[in-house]
Length: 401
Length: 230
Image (cartoon, rainbow over all chains, first blue to last red; front, side):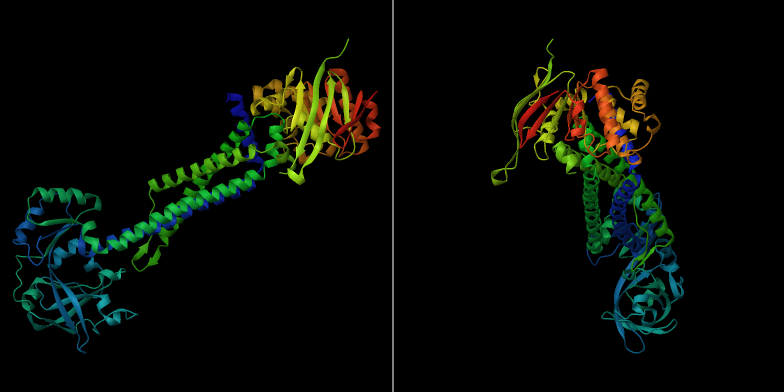
C-alpha cells in the first residue's frame, strides 16, 4: 500500500468522523462504559480484598508474625528477643501476645467463649489500632489490674442485630472469667472497641498484670507470638529475610500467609475480581464488535460506492481500521477519564460496607491493560467487519445496503 | 477510416439464483461499442439493461461470456485490477447519483484522484474547472443533501469526468430528474462526447432523448431485439 492510498484511507476516515460525529460519540460512549464496567467491579473487589487484609493487619496481625514451630509451646526470652529485633530497620511497632481461651459470663449468666489477648498496652498500641477505635470507655493502662477491653461483637447493647452469643454489659460492670485450668476471677469492663469489620471484633484484651492475677502460670518472659508492624506492606519480605538471618528458632510468617485462615475470602474476592475483569473485557470487546458492526453495516452503501468508483477494498478496509482505532483510543481516553472521575467520587463518598469504607482500587496497570484490550478489540472488530463487508458484491452493497 | 472498437461484449450471460428460483437476466448478448460513440442501451424494465452495465463496469461477475476492453478480456481480472480498471478506464454514473454523503461536492469529485496523487493544488483546480463547466462552482462546498437532484447528477458526472475515462457508462442519468434537468444532463453528455471525444454509453428509455445517440441497442427479455443506427 503506497502513501497516497494510506492518505486516501485517512481522508475517508476523517470525513466519516466529522460527518457522523454524533453517532460516533454514542459509539465512543458505549466503548467507554464497557471500559468503566471492566475496571470498577474489579476495583471494588480488589479494594475489598485489600481492605479486609488491612483490617487484619491493623488490628491483630501486623505485617510479620513470629511464633514457635510447635503448637502449644512458647517463645522464650521474649523481651530480649524483641530488643534485638528492634535494631532492624523499618519497624513501626513490635509487641508480644499471649492468648488464653476462656469463658466470660455477665451478671445474668449469659456467657461467651472467647480468646483473651494478654498484651502490654503501650507496645500493643504501636502495632494495632484497637486503642484508637474505643467506642465506649478506654484502652488498657499499664499496671491497672483486673480490667478487660472487649470487641463490640461480644456486647449486646453495642449491636443493633443480635447475630451471635453476646454479654449484657456496660462499662465498669463485672465479668467473670472461667476456665478449666484456672480459678474463677472477676474483671471489670474497661472499654469496648468498634471496628467496621466485625471479624476483628471478637477478641478481648487484658494487660500483663491482670493476666498474672487470673492465670497463675502466666510468665511474662514467654509469649505465643511477636507481632511486628512495618511502615508499609512492601517491607514485609525484607523483614522476613532479615529475621531469617538472625537464625531464630521460630516460625516467621508474613501477614499474607498468616491470614490464610481467611484466604478463602480473599481468594474468592480475587477470583471474582479477576473473573469480572475478564468478563468485562470480553463483554466490552463483544459490544465494540456489535457497535462497529452496526456502524459499518450502515455504511454498506457508501462502501459500495467508494469501491464502484475504483477505490480498492484494502483502502476502504484501512479507513475503517483507522476509524476503529480512533474509536478505541477515544473510547479508552473517555473510559479512563470517567473511571478516574468515578473513583474520585467514591473517594469522597466511599461505599459503606461491612468491612469498611470501600474506594475502588485501580492502578495504572489495570488502566493500561483495559486500554490495550479495548483498542485491540476495536481494531480487530473493525478489521473483521470491514473485511466482511468489502468482500460483498458491490451491487448488493449499493442497492441492498 | 473504421473506428476502433473500445468495448466488445460477447455471449454475455448473467443468471441469478439456482434451481427453480433461477432467473436469466441477460441471455447471451453480444455487441461492440466504438471509440467516440454515443450509444444507448434501451428497452423495457427487466430487459437486462442495468445488469449488462454492471457486468461491463465490473461491479458484478457475469455467469459466462467475455467483455473485452481495448484488447483485453477484463472478466478474469483480480479484485485489485478490477478496481484499477474502474478507477482509470471507466466513469460510471448511477441512476440515483450515489454520491458520498460525508463528502462535499468538490470532495466527491476529486476522491477518485486522491489514490493516485493525493489532494494537490492541480487536483483541486481540475475539480473546480469541471464544476465551473457544469455551472456548479458556487456549490462546491455543499454536501449532497444540500443539492437538488439535477445538481447531484451533474456532480456525479463531474466525478466520472475528472478521471478522464476512456468510456462513461451512465445508468439512466435522467430518470430521477424533471424534463428540463434531464435535457441539461443529456446536452452535457453530448457535448463531452463531441468536444472531448469521450465514448459514452447510456441506458435510456426516453424517446425524447433518442436524437442524441449514434446507435441504440434495444434489449428485450435479456436479449438484443435490434440495433438502431442514426
